[in-house]
Length: 365
Image (cartoon, rainbow, N blue to C red; front, side, top):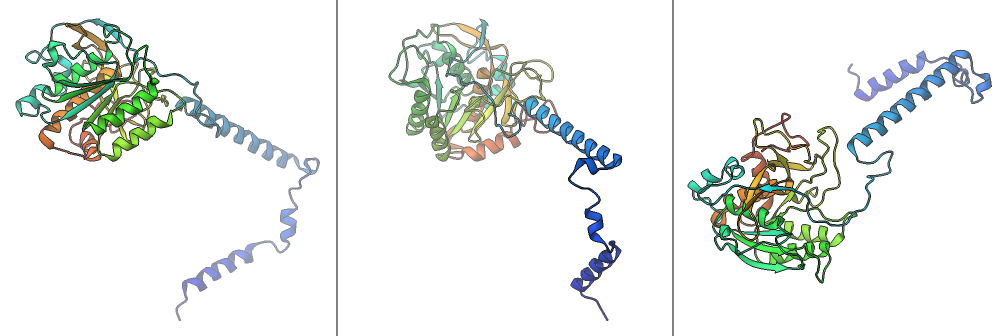
């Protein structure tokens, strides 16, 4: 007495078919392909349909433009550019040292970490940048290796790397710093090639963390991407600046800052040292931003002795690199870059800005 599911479906289909007009051809013939034979109502219907389709197409194109990701299947549009020294703004800085830490380092927990004996002991951090003044007394002799692929420019001019390395040192004072220079007027290798070689050399030298406060050329040079994947495969953590070409609008995305946008790296945006940690206007936003760090009015070391203040996502990244170095003290997270990146977001960051993960600050500060 019961009816199977198939029978029920067939019965339903039959009931629907029973409701169709007997002359099905008359239905399909009501709208011909010749517009001259259309009724006024049919003409209006077709016109409305075309108008709606055009409006949808325009909206899609507008959204694509807002996201800066290309439009209508054409892919991202970006003018090629060459690797350049990171652009930051500079000003005089007050005296800082291991006893008087910069405010940025304090906000990132440097004092508490060091009181807990999490000082970066046993950790090697590579700084791929414009070179480090290893003789600056502020480093306390912790710059243990220098491999310069490019040179020819005085460090007084190429001061970026010393500043970046200084921030890492303030966060993790016992970590060993490895200096790989990729900027300078002269060298046997181009900048992008030098970066790729530096990444591989850092892995070979046993560095657990690589800081790259820089932006490579576009279109992407394949040897750099290959080197990044190689390092990630070895469990090395790579911390990168998110980029300084932001427009201050969190609803638009800047899509071309590599290596920060690769999933194998940690992309760090910049926030200010003020209430609520607001995002710096220059900080780039996109779905690949992982976390944010202090990147405005950051005081650190200056080549030749002394101190200076800089701003840029270049300054935010080393705060995070130094924090990770401290967390890796004496073998913690050894060869486990993926786990450390996951814990950075879930355990060591707190939400700021828009609730939850957002394109400006990632999982938070």
